[in-house]
Amino acid sequence: MVLTYYHLVSPSFDVLVLGAGAAGLLCAFEAGRRGRRVALLEHADRIGKKILISGGGRCNFTNLHTTPENFISANPHFAKSALARFTPDDFLALVNKHRIPYHEKTLGQLFCDHSASDITNLLEAECRAAHVQIFLNTRITAVQRTTEFVLHSNSAEFRAPVLIIATGGLSIPKIGATSFGYDLARQFGHQIVPTRPALVPLLFNRPDSRRYAELAGVSMEVIATADDNSFREKMLFTHRGLSGPAILQISSYWEKGLPIHLDLAPQRDATASLRASPHRDLAATRKVLQQFLPNRFAGRWLEFHTPPNYTNPSLAAFETQLHNWTLVPADTEGYEKAEVTAGGVDTRQLSSKSMASALVPGLFFIGEVVDVTGHLGGFNFQWAWASAAAAARSL
Ligand SMILES: Cc1cc2nc3c(=O)[nH]c(=O)nc-3n(C[C@H](O)[C@H](O)[C@H](O)COP(=O)(O)OP(=O)(O)OC[C@H]3O[C@@H](n4cnc5c(N)ncnc54)[C@H](O)[C@@H]3O)c2cc1C
Image (cartoon, rainbow, N blue to C red; front, side, top):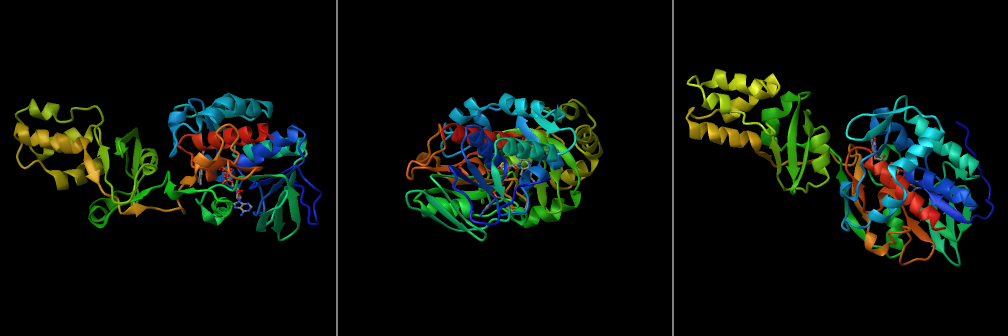
């Protein structure tokens, strides 16, 4: 990978984009294609580090079934305009242009066949074609606004009338996540919707840990519910709690202290055959559970939920418990393990058409730093692309 890297005082630019991740890269080349002179500033030593680790290294770069309902925000209407004007097909056109092989995994989720680096190569090639100048290892020390934005960094001073913040969220600090975008937003008077780790595994409380932590590795299909939002997908036991797509999805809605609910037998009358049989005992009940639950989990569940007798009311209570296992997680695994950050720059002070600040002319916020958080399944990249395109097209 060859990147332009300038050390000295830079020429003047029309647009400064801060953060060479998904949103920053797309915004930079879209603006460049429109004839703007763009500098893309990144504090890491390479572009798109989060893209490279995404989707298990294969980057789930969009979701064909993207709708505004796949996003969480204090203002659920905010994302609609940008999502409608840059669709999954628009990104797919780029993927096809670069002949990147991909496949649909499940539920409209598109992944690279080979490697997420196909996507970073695409973005880098488009930046090069649009004459975007990329500055790596560039640490911004101060941002001022005079008649234009002036950015002081460890290597140079950058000036432009437009500043686009694409510095992402707080998840995975070890690959370069910082609070820079939120701090800068505050500096210019923007409100921040409190941030929290999202799409993140949940931790057992102590009693549940004693009961279930040794099931680590066991996985099963459940309907997981938090704050009235439900997802039917796989759940995975870990050494410290619960993970898997169902849990990651509800983690974005979960708040500390609140319960989560798990239906362990979705759409199933699990005890019907027992109720119809005269042979009702622990062995028969275990056999029934093992028809749809992993053996290790079925055994452990029965240790703590043995029907007191096998009368119909007792089996009905057992059935109810199976459909509503209620747990209060101790916490999440935090930003170290979270795929995204929920909350962020408050959308009430941004234009939904262009992502421009309503407070500071020329200032824009795009991507994950904004209070728009996608469900699991390629939606977060789709938001990064769509919000980036919205900003670039308004320049
Ligand atoms: C493990 C993992 C897997 C994921 N998999 C998927 C997936 O398959 N599909 C999906 O849709 N989403 C996925 N996501 C979420 C997705 O990666 C993010 O939502 C998306 O990258 C956000 O794009 P962004 O451009 O806003 O931020 P980022 O891609 O995080 O880019 C922000 C950039 O800004 C830079 N930066 C930060 N601070 C500064 C600073 N002070 N100065 C200069 N530069 C700075 C960072 O180094 C980074 O390059 C995954 C996330 C993780 C952590």
